[in-house]
Length: 112
Image 1: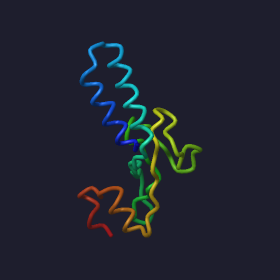
Image 2: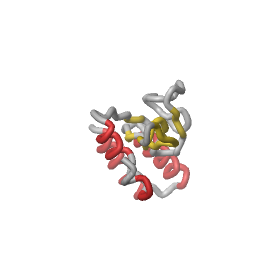
Image 3: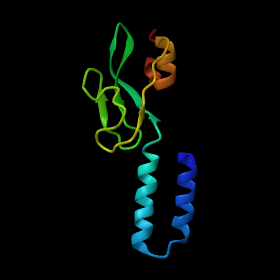
Image 4: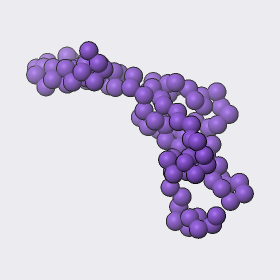
């Protein structure tokens, strides 16, 4: 049984459970299982170097916990705040990195 199959079965059980306590336990179980499926971190930047954005920030897609390049949590397999499994991508080039992780604000698009 795959993780997705388990989530589907638990969701079906949740729909027929009559007792609040059991329904809450099923919901918590579903949430915990979903956190084992890696989600891509959300990359961002907070500055420029030679006119190029420097991507050195990321956040958890589940809870928004922030990561900064150089910190011990950078490229962690799991979010230290909520336990979400994380997927970190490595871009082939700066252009690919910029295109994949963020869109430049309108006022900066023609600066390069």
